[in-house]
Image (cartoon, rainbow, N blue to C red; front, side, top):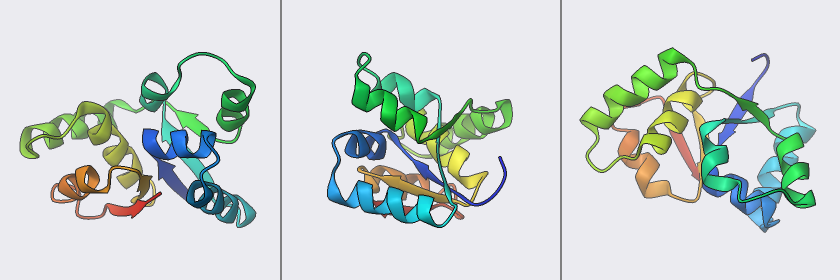
Length: 126
């Protein structure tokens, strides 16, 4: 990945699909400034419930990347340390930390718990 990036978790991608005001503002602000909006491909499994024109549009506007072995291993360690963390949230957190550390989410409390393991993680509500 090149250039600055922010990470959207599944909730943020859903909010973008639903054209929620905050999601649209964050996305537009980022893109207008040349900031990539990225998400690991595992979020697609939580989000994608079949093809629609809107989903295709949202997908085209995101940088979707596979989580690297390093990210997945780090997420696994986080799962062992953060009680109640979910696999996909841990992957999203590790993915974000490998970029700028910024994650937008609808589940702030879940990611704040993961921030105890990932001190560089900055969590923002979508």
